[in-house]
Image (cartoon, rainbow, N blue to C red; front, side, top):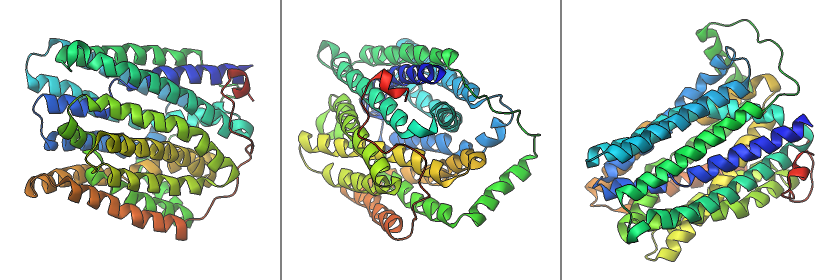
Length: 422
């Protein structure tokens, strides 16, 4: 009974969060920055700060997890921080009278949420690994993701007319988007109150010095050759960050602010279709196959975005949306299968933190290339796609599939709450 209750509340939590997130996506923030006269350099700033703050601190999260009673507590606290950040951003947007403070509200919220995500992601992954029974983990994960994609799709469809209320996007319309998101984030966070671990973990071991903890990362890397190959492939995936942050900004420059929520709709629609496909790839084939699908999706994105039509922009965002679903699936299933129970948090942390150094300079490098080449977006997107081919080759030739997990191999999950409980 507790398993069913947990899955139902995790569905509710993710549905509310996904619905709210569709009102404050990077697409919306890019359009807001463009509307206030912001340059590609500001897009680089928000991309770099968000990416670095999301990933770098994750190396230290397992260290602090030993000081928190349960990953459920860590995930709830970090999500409460992110919800409060968007409440403050919405208030700033309502009160702001100058472009500086309007952009500061959006960029500050995105960067602060990056920091919150750094502490939320590992705790949340650990929480789901504990609350989803291993025999039905893939089915439960895919079903939760499916519901969240439906919610995000509905939110994106609502965002389109809300942002264009009165005929065009205005500061008041952006405030409405931020306010709706804030309310939904608060409601989502309240779901943590109802989650219960049916088998609470034992008392944590004695606290270790930070240096000893960091040395354990080196021990893991020396002991696991497949982990080294995986992280090396991830480096090339992160190198696409030189142009990834400019995709929506480029579309807005060509077609106006109204295309921003349409980009969100296209990405989420793709995600909705990709969820059952990713489930089939993970259960019937191997998690590594989803990595191949991710690389191909990102390469297609950079190729399609340059076509001079709205339809091809939607197609590019569709490919990106599917690719990101494949990515979150392989990060969850592949990393979980590679690691032992005691080291899962460190494996998740390494898989995220490996990209942090690149996020410090790649968006700025992309903005610099745009500046010296007179906004040659084709060159920047080509530079983004090139390393993806190298990463794809590493995955296909050198990465090994981990031993299979004890999960069910069945049909695409039926989207019913009764089915989710296993």
